[in-house]
Image: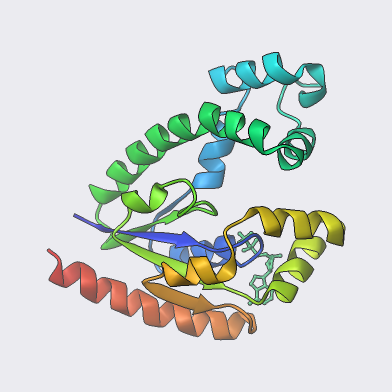
Length: 204
Ligand code: ADP
């Protein structure tokens, strides 16, 4: 059995960047955000439920989900956020478990579940260890604004809706400090890769 490492961190902490670096070392991964997009793709029951509740404004011209509009609705109202999560989380969980089972049966010594909501959604129960990517909030806001083209107010609202930095760090088995440059990040990933290969070896 291959070891399952959960990778999490706030928005723009570097989760995708970290996953790509592990992939270069031959490590497979599944991204909970990709699965979350799959369950609201056209033809999926969750998208039909969302469109029924909020109407045409949450759909784009092609009948897909207008994520920006939906995000505004649920960030403005915790009740709506809970409703949306009740629609999507069980479906995301089911698909995630299927992907993890596939990777666990494969040849890689370990594999990753990359999820911004690893702790908040209970997905931590699906992994053997939690790797938290940590960046100072100012850097997180700067990278969010520059990557997603959102203004500072929106970036702050997104960050505020997530688990706070200390709560996340308290639950970490391993931590990546991604406040430095890409070279500093690569060194930490190589060290973790060696540690995870050793752990996978001894847990066999
Ligand atoms: P996440 O998946 O956690 O939202 P990303 O991996 O997309 O975060 O990273 C957010 C942004 O920050 C991206 O534009 C990425 O290129 C950049 N980034 C990530 N790590 C670093 C780093 N160490 N130095 C500079 N920019 C970085």
